[in-house]
Amino acid sequence: MDGFDAAIGRTWTDDRPGEFLTDLTAIGSRMGGSEGEARAAEIVADAFRDAGVRNVEQDPFEMQAWQRGDSSLRVRSPVEREFETIALPYSPAGEVEGELVDAGYGTPEEIDELDVAGKIVVASTTTPEGGRFIHRMEKFGYAIGQGAAAFVFVNHVPGQLPPTGSLTFGREAEAPAVGVSKETGAWLTEFAEVSNSDTSNSRFRSAKSGNAEGDTRVRLTVDAETTTGRSQNVQGRLGPETDEEILLLAHYDGHDIAEGALDNGCGVAAVLTAARVLSEAENELDRGVRVVAVGCEEVGLLGAEHLAETIDHDDVAAVVNVDGGGRFRDLIALTHTSESTGEAVERVSERANHPVEVESDPHPFSDQWPFVRAGVPSVQLHSDSGERGRGWGHTHADTRDKADDRNIREHGVLTALLVDELASTDADRLEQEELAEAFRELEFETGMKAASLWPEGWE
Image 1 (tube, one colour):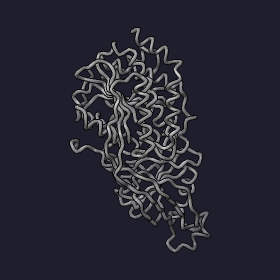
Image 2 (cartoon, one colour):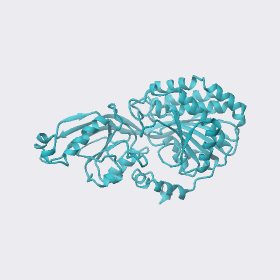
Image 3 (cartoon, rainbow, N blue to C red):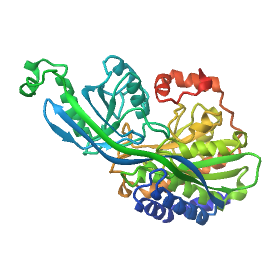
Image 4 (cartoon, helix red, strand yellow):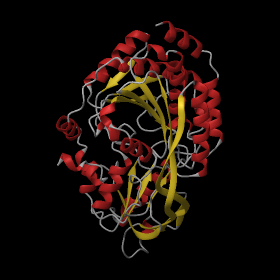
């Protein structure tokens, strides 16, 4: 393993991963389909070539681009007040006025206990401890499916940081939706309680006494536009020419409200680091490696879906998706029910003398999903901050100063070792029935159906 050892040794002092992240985040917005994302693709392509990746090219595809306009949330009663909002991607333009209702975490069980028909539903970005994390798309989809007229997504992280995040996978949503800060959410929760309290117990009883309907009225306005756009994947090759290949990928796009350093600048920087290690030791690889930076993950895995449509799944031995890797100290491998890939991760952990936590639960919200759905054994490399939820991600605070180059270099090395391990492993394909059952056991079915993500063949 001389080639790997030498490449790994050089990585510890390499400034290029940090320089790459600086160049990427200096762009600002890398929103899917935007000029910023196109500039980022050029930076990624140049960095791939510099790392030794061969035959680097851009693969364009059409998509539904979404452009943010102004949005507002004005409480009409029990007081008059306007709050800062951020429209959520693929929210349609429109104006809704109605009663405000607090759905807590926004789980299906909580929404079922409420009358949300025609109302504006407020839900938190986090979910209760002890269960799986319920995605924004599930909460929105279920609330609108139960008749809600609009949706307000409340950040659980303090700091006046309204969150963003797509409502759908690449198409205009059914109802307007915005994100608001934790501090705004606290006010909205209190206002919503007015509707469920009598006048004598309300802190706003003097204001409420003038409200004949006895509820909290809110006007939500969103200005946005969905148009035909263009994005691109950046891809190249490493290692020998073989019938089967390992697919190493990360998304390089981000949201328009921040630099996207943690999500997923660190991830694509870790893939670049891994590619450099692999290129210096590619004679030792047992399978070829396709390295891909995919676009439009944040607006619906559109780059990954395009990639999955353009390659033969039978030729992909395994997928390694770095989404969340490189952000924080501790690496986590999400193996999506695959025992073979989990065992490969454990061998890498032992080989590197570095702890890597293995979690076998599947989820459909990152770029491995089109391949998992097709039965391809896959790993998503994530990292753990010790906190529940996204932290700074999907807010204005996802900036370059939050990243630590040491994590990027270290996780890049571990990624390279995992690719090498999987290149010599015949990982078992995923069985559709077993995968569907795993999702059901995790209580994904209701939420995925609400978000239009449950595969038709799983009925």
